[in-house]
Amino acid sequence: MTSRTVLVINSGSSSIKYQLVDPDSGAALASGLVERIGDVQGAIIHKVDDAKHVVEEPVPDHGFGLSEVLRLFDEHGPRLSEANIVAVGHRVVQGGRFFNGPALLTDEVVATIEELVPLGPLHNPAHLKGIEVARTLMSDIPQVAVFDTAFFQDLPEEAARYGLNREVADRYSIRRYGAHGTSHQYVSGEISKRLGRDDLKQIVLHLGNGASVSAVVGAHAVETSMGLTPLEGLVMGGRTGDIDPAAVFHLVRVGGMSIDEIDHLFNRESGMKGLTGESDMREVTRMMDEGNQDAIDAMNIYLHRLTKYVGAYTAVMGGLDALTFTAGIGENDARLRAALCERLAYLGVTIDAEANARRSDEPVTISTPESSIVVTVLPTNEELAIARQALTLI
Image (cartoon, rainbow, N blue to C red):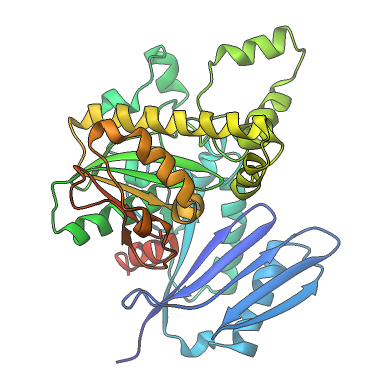
């Protein structure tokens, strides 16, 4: 039987990430990146069979970029005409209240994603470009949207609704939507399989340049740190995370800043970058080792926020069975994991230092047998999750 595949596309404002996935085996058959779309010089990187093929050329728009990707598949493999592609899966960040699962991309669904641009102004427009181009270039293949917000669609009302005037909140669709839902759903599901239980009380820490935490009971999210937008919650690479909303009023009235300037400040120039000058956690760690006090303070702020969320979510669930680290920082920063678990010792968390220090592409349990909570490092795989969700509609 010929393996079936799904081409997963994550279209950004100036980039396209892609991966050809075998959803049954979980294997990535090829992957790549189109970057610097619209710049004077762009680049396309296509990886297959441990080989990397790089094309440096101007990439004027997403249409040209994706056309070149299809050419590279034909030139270097796997040939898409022979790959038994059954679907193209598109990552879409904001699905609002409309989508609680994947959606076949019809004209009506595309129009709804466009209507949601005010809720996802940094992401949905770029996704729409990728969708438009892929539907044109691969019109004979079913196209599916998979939404970051879908996993959090059924959050309890007490978690999803803000203490904002009800009429205003409903008129402008202001509520907690969350983000990184594909990752949180995938990781929590894998932990349930790994521990052989479907009634777990879990916390998933998705720690990358963007970072979020979720509380999951059984297969359902009951809390998540990102809110109306991905700005709320943890301290991140460039985002403030939680901040008093009145800081906006203060910066307008006293600082004379515009809304756009504050938006840029909160989303791009704050977080670890604003605190240390560096958004890359590896650089922050290097600065700490050199005795830089700003970096030391920033890491403590980062850990404090994490500790606060873990404690709060444990209280919301009435206990905690499993804590899981995932995404770039969560999977690779052993020092940060150890520091957080040390702060969680009051919950009965104990970790195995040797297991924590081990680098692996596979899931690793880093807690000791005596630990009251199972602590795991589990690599996320959003592309596989998107591919498998896309299959459910085919």
